[in-house]
Length: 240
Image (tube, rainbow, N blue to C red):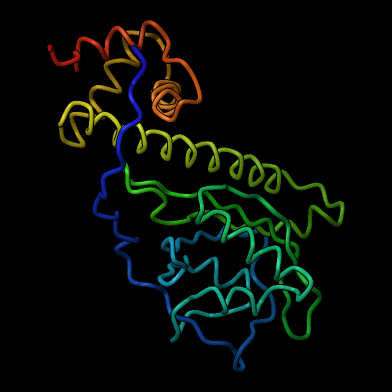
């Protein structure tokens, strides 16, 4: 039995980070001499790009000091090389539509050469509500691009890969939970426990189970027999 494609149900969006947005203004008053490199900044914005959160490192990466204004898309674009701005804006728009990205860009600052950054973005899903936010990291790789051998740079590049994998796993799990909630009329915690139960009994990772369920529900694949059998027991078809 393939999991039927579930009708989308609006779920209350997961709130942005509860930490209040770190404000910003430019030093002298707008720029600092240089950000400690390499740095890893983190960010999150809602699906409409209206509410943003930046970690303090994110401000430093763009030559800013936290002290007054809220982060936004225009603030980010203002700190990106003009030639890179269209790509950055398009990548973020694509992420809001469900497509992750990883790209290099040049951060411009007054009085110093541009820094090379890697910006990673992953859509965040909330059950059946679709994309509710985009979150990711930004890493300064300038020294590595200049040919400097740096174990820390390698560690940061590994962290980028791991962060993307973790975000992709969470997105798949959130989608699968939403499908199971609709199929079984259960709550979020029970849906996750069902995913974990299937994972344990099929010797598959939770992410693999989630991907199989979402692929089947969207008509992009056939549900494996072992997962189908457990789901059949958990939510048997109604008799007629």
